[in-house]
Structure formats: C-alpha cells, structure tokens
Amino acid sequence: MRQDAVRGHLDGLLLAVLEPAPLHGYAIITAVQQRSGGALELRTGTIYPALNRLERLGLLRSTWEAEGGRKRRCYALTEAGARFLADERTAWQDFTAAIGSVLNPVAPHPHPHGQGA
Amino acid sequence: MRQDAVRGHLDGLLLAVLEPAPLHGYAIITAVQQRSGGALELRTGTIYPALNRLERLGLLRSTWEAEGGRKRRCYALTEAGARFLADERTAWQDFTAAIGSVLNPVAPHPHPHGQGA
DNA sequence: CCTCGATAGGTAGGCCACCAACATATTGGG
DNA sequence: CCCAATATGTTGGTGGCCTACCTATCGAGG
Image (cartoon, rainbow over all chains, first blue to last red; front, side, top):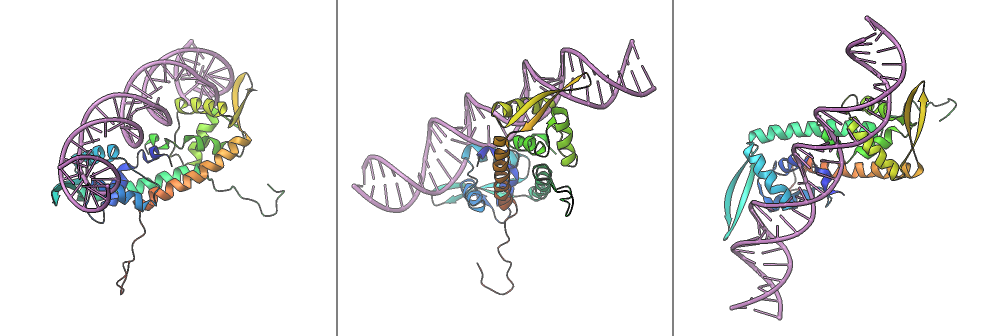
C-alpha cells in the first residue's frame, strides 16, 4: 500500500491508538502496524512532528518517563482529543461513503425481467 | 469535506464514472458530484490534467465531438482502464480496511465472565 | 571492551498531487 | 449587450507525508 495514502487521516490514526491507553512514539508506530495487520508502517519523520502538532492543539498531553536509563515521551489523549477523535471517525465514515458511492455505485435497478443489461 | 481528501483516489473516481458510459470533462465533474451526494466537487484544474495523464497511460481514450457548434472531448474507458479500475477498487477496500481497523478496532470482548483474551 | 541490532526520539529538505486563479470560447436568456 | 451556464484548459502555490540523516541507550555476542 502507498504509505502516502494516510494523508489527511494521520491525526485520527494517532488519536485512535492512544484511546485505550497512553503510548510513546515508538510504541505508536508498532501499534498502528499491528492494528492494521501490517498494512500501515508509519515513519518517525511522520509521527513526531504530527504528535507535537497535536499536543500544541491540546489534543494530546505528553509526559517524559524513565524506563531504566532510557527516556520515553508518553502521549495521552486529552478530552479535547477524544472529542476530536469522535469527529474524525464521523468524517472518515462520510469520506468512505462519498468515495465508495462513486467507486461502487448502487446498481440502478438491475431489472429482473427486462431486456437485460 | 476537505476536497484534498480525494488525493490518491482521484484516478479511481474518474475511471468509475466513465464505466457505465463515456462522458466529457464537465459531465464528469457533475457525475462525481451527483454520485457522491454533493460531497465531492472536483475542479477543472484537478481533472483535466488527470484525464490527460490517464489517456497517456492508455487507461482512457478521448474523441472530440461536436454538440452544436460546441466541442466536447469525450473520454471512454479502455480495457486496460477497466482492469485498472478493478485494481483500484481492490486497493480501496484494502485501504479502508487498514485505516478502519486502526480507527475502529474490534472491541476485545468486554466479556461478562471469562478471563478472556 | 567493542560492535551491532533493537529501542527511542528527533530534524531538514524534497516531492507531488491537488487547489485556486486565471484564460478562452460558445450558447441562450433578460 | 451583458451575464450565467457550459466547456476546456494552464500556471503557480501549498501542504503533508517521505527520505535521509542524526543522536542516544540497552542487551547480546564476539
């Protein structure tokens, strides 16, 4: 799959994987990969700027945690983030419905006994 | 809806509306608009370059037709175009499945009485 | 001890598909 | 005559994701 295809839907993906529990960046990548059955492989250059942006927007909140001597930046969904995620889910459904109805239109009456297709 | 959202799916949309019958550019715009229930409004600056590209790729074939004194360039799906459209439909399903499974994961069994999972 | 792969976080620059704006021409109604 | 709708295109800009790169820690193996 073209990785570029996530364009416009990245924010929703990030917020969605953070919904059950906070995660750090590296874990977000693997979570998206696993949830999508390996289809989506986000890059660090993609998610870190996005996570910063989402935090600036108040949709995420990050805290530094120490796992051993290693530092992790853990991202958690805020209430605004949860609301935004709900909107993104609605937008996603509208989007797929729109594209889908063009790509696979409902057949205009296949006509059981007409002078056929 | 962000028009930009069609990014990466435009080719499929164009081929799909040309599947039932050939259309000229202006009619393609209105066809996509109608089929999507008004959600998708493509611009001339979007579709004309795309149509030219698809013709160069051999997925479309165009013919100039005269409606009165007015000239129309009519685009028709080629066999290669029909095959490409089939691939695009498959890719669309894979894409929505991937994003969808991240955005709306199957709930891991709230489970009334088991130590599930 | 040193190296290497996995883990972890991050920046800089490039690409390209789509968009906004513009240009042109015909037809028909007010 | 002028304007809106129909009809086809081009040019330049933008923005979001990717490629490539950099730093650093930890554990395993040589």
